[in-house]
Length: 205
Image 1 (cartoon, one colour):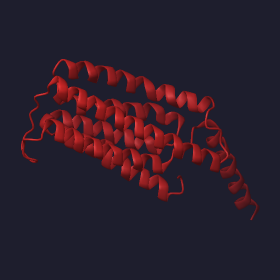
Image 2 (cartoon, one colour; image 1 turned 90 degrees about the horizontal axis):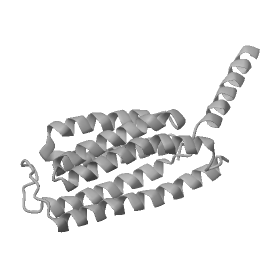
Image 3 (cartoon, one colour; image 1 turned 135 degrees about the horizontal axis):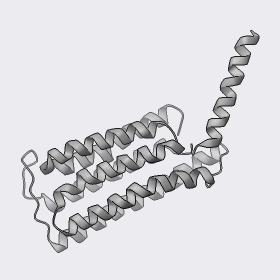
């Protein structure tokens, strides 16, 4: 009996140490919302650049200045709504588990997340302006996956698995360039929804 209590105490101490060294306020609902917004954005992007093509044929793009502006507006809209819902649900979870939303662990997580994200965003924008639109979906998936893996050292370990899946999906999308938007919808849409639902139903809302 004493041995069992000793083991349980060790588990509690380990859990407390893990909570104190990681940013654990990530919300499953924020992942679900981000996935839904991404699917909506993917549909709007499809209607913008592939409106006259068949769903299951090889895709080619002929981007004009007008369509580029629309695509950038769609991307900014998806990011904005995802950030708003992410901040809301993350704040609510932090309050529920009595954790500070902004501390040194949050800073470390955001810094390590931002470096690959900003780098990938700048590279994607340059390629888009130079007319290499077919590489945007693969690159954003790869750099986003790298960002999640990089930031997973300071948050929930499940984000590492999500990051690896995003990287693999991005590499696959590099081979099937004409289907990039479909891979983008799977990576940023469906995987986020699945990941968010997993976190939510594991009482990590």
